[in-house]
Length: 225
Image 1 (cartoon, rainbow, N blue to C red):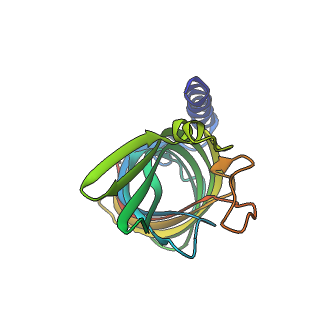
Image 2 (image 1 turned 45 degrees about the vertical axis):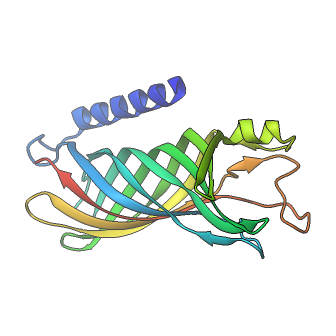
């Protein structure tokens, strides 16, 4: 967490310096602040199994962002977001239907570049840094529910696996911004880092699994003018 706070502080400071050094007046191109809220359809890739049905975990994302339009067609938007992600699996054990939910929550730092091909409509692309802050495994069946920390569950069952606390990915999105500061947008986050690492992260055939985050999101944003 300390590493994340230092990274954000340095980044915000660099934006302030850039704004102070610009030749453009602050009234025409200031750094602006905004808030955002949306919902996620999250999955973990390469987690399918023949006897288990895999579904998206429905979650939320909430946070804030800075916005700097440095030319007529381009803007830079760093964000700080809390995002609930993971996966839902449905199967059966000894005739009992069981739902297993992986609750993988992250603090995210997307660094987005926006391109405006037409007025108020944008396409965005950028890297994303993620820091895992919650890693739970919940099993529900026969009217009962049990919850573990994922790493504790692995240790208790002698599974050679561990949750990766850092996540790196690429974001792709598009959206529309209204005159009053309100905006709507959709985004896909492609995880490039393994969520779990270890010798026992394998499928039913014993083949290594590359389990990564995959998140579709849709949400609203408001930018203060």
